[in-house]
Image (cartoon, rainbow, N blue to C red):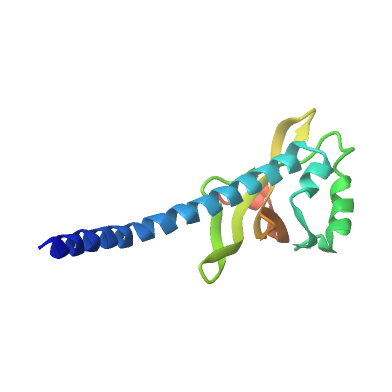
Length: 170
């Protein structure tokens, strides 16, 4: 009877662990996703307000930037040079995420998340003295972020579907 009781308790314990496994995996997924969202938010905060060095911190050394109107920038140094052009801009464009458009998808190697696809839309605003004065454009973006040495870095940037605010349907 004692062995039967132990087997029963062991079976219940194993069943409980099996039932918890999807929830545990979901928690791990939420952890990577929260990290990616935090990096995405920090990147765009630096785009709007920070020096280019802070913006560039989020870029992989082999970053590639593809823009449907501005062409291609390959490598960290090339994109850092473009970003440095914002450092001395008095009335810097402001980027604002369009609500409810941000989507994040894991990239896995087996069970491990090694990267993430981040997609969404953003509006661009003209500013004067740091204050938004008008929306002038909307575009879509897709980023590939990779986990490199425990740090999320943006490796590929696709900026496309640029349209004037007057052409944007609400």
